[in-house]
Structures are given as structure tokens and as C-alpha cells.
Amino acid sequence: MSKLALRDEILLQVEKPARYIGNEVNAVIKDKSQVDVRVAMCFPDVYEIGMSHLGIQILYDMFNKFDDVWCERVYSPWVDLDKKMREESIPLFALESQEPVKDMDFLAITIQYEMCYTNILQILDLAHIPLRATDRDWSHPIVIGGGPCVYNPEPIAPFFDIFYIGEGETRYRDLLDLYKECRKQEMSREEFLRAAAKVPGMYVPLFYQVEYHEDGTIRSMKPTQEGIPERIVKEVEMDVSHTYYPEKPVVPFIKVTQDRVVLEIQRGCIRGCRFCQAGQIYRPVRERDLDMLKNYALAMLQNTGHEEISLSSLSSSDYSKLPELIDFLIEKCGEKKINISLPSLRIDAFSLDMMSKVQDVKKSSLTFAPEAGSQRLRNVINKGLTEEVILNGAALAFQGGWTRVKLYFMLGLPTETEEDIRGIAELSNKIAAVFYETVPKEKRVNGRVQIVASTSFFIPKPFTPFQWASMCTKEEFLEKAYATRTAIKGQLNQKSIKYNWHEADISVLEGVFARGDRKIADVIERAYEKGCIFDAWSEFFQGELWMDAFDELGIDIDFYTTRKRELEEIFPWDFLDCGVSKEFLKREWKKALEETVSPNCRAKCQGCGANRFGGGVCFYDQPRAEETSRYAAHGSRSE
Image 1: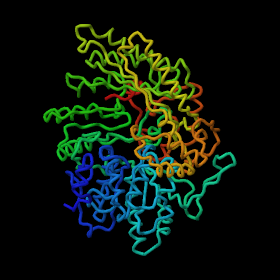
Image 2: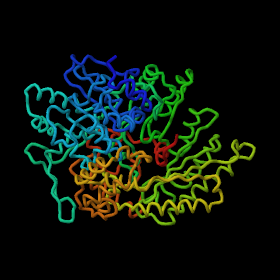
Image 3: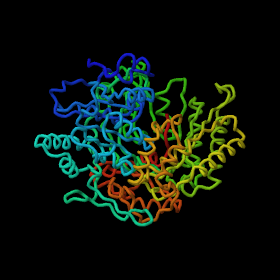
Image 4: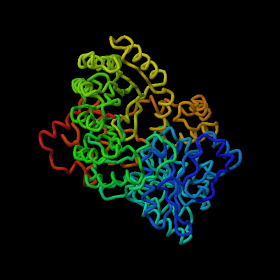
């Protein structure tokens, strides 16, 4: 094992030192003298969060299957170690070799959540890498970003050399070979980046110039050099059954957020929820082969020793071979007392039947996401979920033995009214009432049902029909939360209902980052200089410092949040092509304002444009009539 980067006295002073020592089960150790390219794969949050992320496990496995590449991992040091590293000028290090990140060829950062942006700067700063790409030379690694947030990379564009747009399985080998050739020929860093900008899916901000109108909106964004594409199409792995997937995921030393084997059963979603970015950017829907899933499930459980397996998907109920997969896992996992987790299920008989198969007599809570309290607003957001379906699903759940239900809603959705807000309380009350109507007194284990209603605040995201929508202010969000709480207190079954809501100031900032342009990079850097990191953690979020940064730089938050957007406005992300067309998104935005529901992809194609990739549900045979009716009832998450 390599000598640890941190002395024993430092490890003894920080919380959970196992975050920093590496050498976990299935970690990959290579002889650095035998590889040509070294990659530090980074998740810009604490170890427990990053180790739970499937995407990094996939890419880590893929890179390390290349004989000429060694991929290591790095996460954000927690605040206690962050302080120590700055005091003693200890450079940020990779877990496997314990060597400085600045000595790597690539620093690859996955960007899953906008509120991690200052942690990206923490990573660069602690690694002794200049924050701005224009200040780097060959003594620094190439900093490349990927993940869902790069579908609007502009707020963090100055900090990155390259963004990889799309799924990582397709083009990294090309990029690594290009890097090796450029270094062999002793090309300059800029020459390499210019060549990289011509690799499909690669966005190099250095070679794009943005021009603005007087009102601050974008006039144009164009490449500054010949041969660099004006529009970048996302990369898609269409054959998800014969691509990279880890048989030996790294097993953490300490308990992490998701301490289990994760089996991704499909990518994409047939549901067209108009607020959901993932449902658009991961189109088309692609299912993994049943035999492949069976083999990987057994291999990963064998190679990790985990006692739980989770089936990962945006909508697990829509995986066509789910019953067969569940039956197989029950047979194999039951022998070894391994739990099966089924997130992302709809609230219907099919889903509850699946849940009843995998949960024992002591039922855990079920989670449903109606998203809106009224039918009118559910039609606006294209949830396609009726109150009848919700209440019938709840009745089936209570009959099956569940006594705790979590409900997820959003406040501040487009066209929302006071009646819609009251609908959250009324629907929660009706679900509680179903329990008392369904379960006889003598069978109520805990006396009463537990309904936990949680509201997040609506944030318009790029590449969704709601990217044109206005967002609420912090004060408006809080007024809506208080109105919801008041309405719940007025319900007959209020004692059975608990209400939670998200932080409004964090939501507003997330809205700025989601639709921001390059001007926001200065704000992020200024806030970081003031001490902002771990903004996704409410105990560390310092809203007043963020407001100071906006004020000092003269950046108007309302321009990015509450401002009305015209249909023809050029957005900061319009140079990217995520597969769905802007015309499709416009049609869906208009249908939302008309309160019109669009059928799901299996029921009827909506012409989104994702069929250009040549596969997925767009090309499946028409389902049988009974299947169509099952898919038509749109439900939501359940776990």
C-alpha cells in the first residue's frame, strides 16, 4: 500500500479518517510506470455522497479496464480536513496512490447538482490548480466536467478546460488517444484543446464567444476558430447491454448514503413530466438485457458482500422485464437474506404487487410523488396521474400492510393557484382517510397512519418545457409553504400528517445556477473567496455571503429567476443538442398553459426528436392492448 498522504496525527484529528486512506475492497491499484495516462475521477462532495454515485463507479471501471490508464478517485475533503490542508499546504491527493491530483493528466469532475459549484473550486484550490482554465499550462491536469449539470455549463465554464456532453462510455477512449498523441508530438496545451473541441460531444469553452444584447440577454454564441462545431450533440450509448458496467464496485470502509449494490436496469424515461430535466436529457429509453442484469446482479453481490441490491431507473415500473427480474432476484437473494430495493415505482397495483414480493412483514414506508395537489395542476405538469389512481394505490398499499406514506409535491409550479396549494393538504387528508376506511381498528399496528408530505420548490431547468417559466422569489416560496402548512393544520386528519419543506434561499440560488450564463462564474468565485463551500448542506449554506457576492458584482438575481422569457430568446445552453428539439419543448410549454396532457412514449410518440439516435422505445413494437393500459396510468416514486 502507498504511504498515506496524511500523517497519523492529522487523521486522528478529523472526523471519519477512513474517507481519506483508500485501499478499499475492489479499489484498483496499478503500477504508475506501466500506464500512459492518469485520471483523477472526482465527485465534488463528501466521500459518503460520492461513493454512492453509480456514474463514477461505471467510469472508474471503464477507465481501469484500459491497460494504459489508471483511474483514481478524489472527493471533497470535509470542513475539518479542508482547514488542516490549507494550514499546512497539503495538496489534494487521489485515494489509490495518495499522490497529488495536480500530477495527474486529467481531473474528471462529475457535476450532479448545482449547489456543488463552490466545491469544484475547493477541489481545484486544494489541488493547487489555478481556478481559471486560461491560467493553466501543461504542469496542470486537463480539467474536464460531465454529468447532468453540463447541459448548461456556462455558469462554471471559465473553470473547465473541457465539458463532456452526454454519456461517458462512448468518447473517452478517443479523447485519451488524442491526448497521448498530442503529448507525444509535444503540442501545446491550446493545440490539444483545439483538437479536443472537434471530438464529438466535447465542449471547450475557450473557443466560444458570447455576445449580449443591451438588456443582458444573449445575442449569439459562436466558435472563434474554424472547424469547431457551432452546435454540440450529446453522446449516447445506445447498446446499454454490452457496454461498461462494474462487476466489482469499490466497497467503502464506512457507511455511505447508499450502502448497496446498484443495478441500473434502463436509461431514460417514457414519461413526459414537463418539469423533469432527466426525463428529457436521457432520452431515448434504453433497456438493459435481462440476462445481462441477472449476471451482473450475482457478480456484484458476490464481489462486494453487500446485503441489499437496488434497481436503478427513472421509472422502474416501465422496465418491460421487471416481473422476471424480480422473481429471479427473490429466488437468488432470498437464500442469502439479501434485501431488494425498488425505487421509482408508480402508485398502482402492478407496482405494489412488486413491492409486496420484495418486502417482508415489517413494511417500510412507500414514497409517492403526486407533485401537485390538484388535477388541474397535474395536467399542467403532465403528471398524468389522477386522484382516483392515487387513492386506489394508497388503499392497496394499506391493505398490503404499509402504514407510512411519503408524499412529494412541488410549490411554485407554473400557473399555480391558492386552490392548488390547498389541494396538497386535501389530498394528504384524503390518503389518511383511506387508511381509516380501509384498515379495521384491530389491524392498525401503530394506531394511526403516518403521512409525511414534503414540498420542494419548483426550479425551471434547461431542456424542459418549463425552461421558459418564471420562478418565485424566496418570499413567495415561503408564503406558499406557510399556506400549505396552514391548510394541513385545518384538515380532519391533521394529526396523521407531518409537513416538511425545502430551504427557499437555496432553491433560488439553484435557479440562478440552472439557467445562468458565464457572468455567474464571477459570483461563484467571489462567494468561494468569502468562504462558501458545501452549499448543498443546509448547516454550511451562507446565504448572506452569496447575496453580498451578487451585490458586489452588480448581478441581478431576478434576471435569472423571476424574469419572463420570450419563446424566441436565445438561452445560454442553446448551442447544445440534448436530443429533444426546441420546437418540441415549445409545443409542450404551450400545452402546459392549455392544461393539456401528452401521452407517454409507449402510448403515442410526441415527436420529441430522440428517435434520431436509432433505438429505444421509439423503435419497439407496439405493446399489446393490456400492456398499453398498464403503461397509461402514470405514477411515481415508491421505495
